[in-house]
Length: 48
Length: 136
Image (cartoon, rainbow over all chains, first blue to last red; front, side):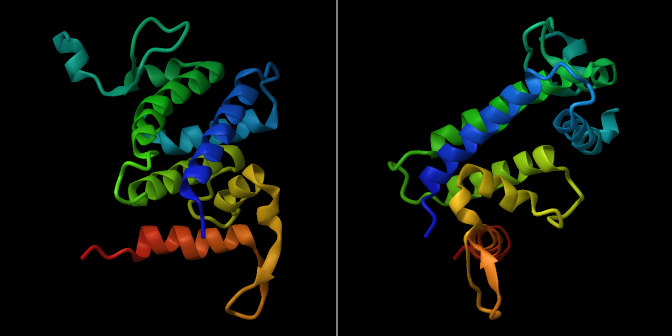
């Protein structure tokens, strides 16, 4: 049984931590930032 | 709202350092840090702030919350671990294992193999809700 209230709360925590970590990155070659950008360009290729 | 704003495709709200809402035609010129900021405020606005309203026990069932949480986990995994167009890199499960390392624990599955608990959530919970739910 999955406690969905718990899972949503933990998802939000992971989401916030993730964006904090890549927002603080100063090295443009930081791998998580590059992974972010690859997905961003894939998801929004129509507009890029 | 002026005519020019109506004719442009809206991407998301303004973020710090950007003088107003973000439109699709601006995206090419956004720096990588600005892409991060623009997507964060977009997801805060489109996903988080709206799903927060579902995270209450006042609703009869948490079904909508479960669906939106799965959407969020999958979306986060695609940015955190990459999006191959399917779940071949286990990005959904890897987010789950990040939020609770106990979900890496392996248990016997119906096929006789042992699999991580995160797989049970992906295949039995997420897939059943997203692909198998039949409203009556």
